Image 1 (cartoon, helix red, strand yellow):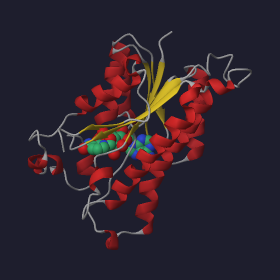
Image 2 (image 1 turned 90 degrees about the vertical axis):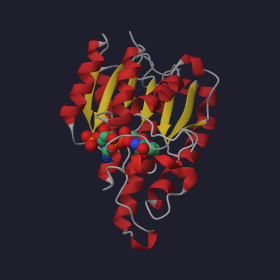
Image 3 (image 1 turned 180 degrees about the vertical axis):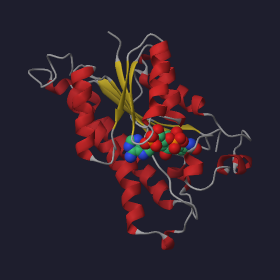
Image 4 (image 1 turned 120 degrees about the vertical axis):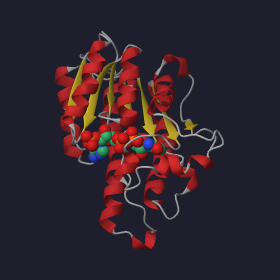
Amino acid sequence: MNPLLLVTGGSRGIGAATARLAAARGWDVAVNCTRDAAAAEVVAADVRVCGRRAWVLQADVADDAQVQAMFARLDREAGVLSGLVNNAGVVDVAARVDEMTAARWQRMFAINVFGSFSCSREAVKRMSTRYREGGAWAAAGGHRGGVIVNLSSAAARLGSPGQYVDYAAAKGAIDVFTLGLAKEVAAEGIRVNAVRPGLIETEIHASGGQPDRAKQLAHQVPMQRTGSAEEVAAAIVWLLSDEASYTTGALLDVTGGR
Ligand code: NAP
């Protein structure tokens, strides 16, 4: 049986690239999305072409009940996971803090921060060796450790003034979440790390009303170019792998030096 990975927000961009590369490296992959199940099905089909198993799981990571239902479906249909990539994330249109609404902040933190908390809680309950004796998932092969990779952002260092300080602050929370959870579960067989991408060519910029944002800011990058979803996926899949067996609590910049 191949190890099982859940990638949240796997229907496009960095999540889709991660699902495809992980499949090529031997993972069965569950592809989560909220909206575009057809796109997620295309990614799942690519996973199956690699000879791995794949599932499409539609759930809003900001909704704790939907996250619990998603993990319950995984338990029933796929088995116990040993990898989680908390990739689902959103930006919003460029604005100053004094122009933002509370509803915007709530959505920003609900998806980008609490979604990662919910999914990680469910993953740790299944992965942690702490529950090995008689734990709820022991019979199904759980409680044997695992690995979690969170998607932070260079924004957590840069602050994104005039664009989306709320997004940057949410990613700052992800950095601290990564450090704390990594220490909390390090002795329970679980590694927790974060990748901090820089300017990566995906549709996230269009969703914030700036489709050319990455290209326009490329001159600020020491390497003088944007990055690809595949370049970020390579870092994520390395962190998932046994090659990163002594790496936990790390915040890995994938930014071309920015
Ligand atoms: P993207 O192309 O916009 O893709 C986002 C993915 O998240 C989609 O699959 C989307 O699927 C899913 N999603 C959105 N809201 C969701 C929710 N509530 N529940 C479940 N899935 C949800 O974004 P990306 O550029 O690949 O970014 C991926 C991650 O990297 C994000 O966390 C982002 O903040 C981070 N990042 C990106 C960049 C960059 O330059 N691209 C830089 C730094 C960090 P549906 O629409 O189908 O729901």
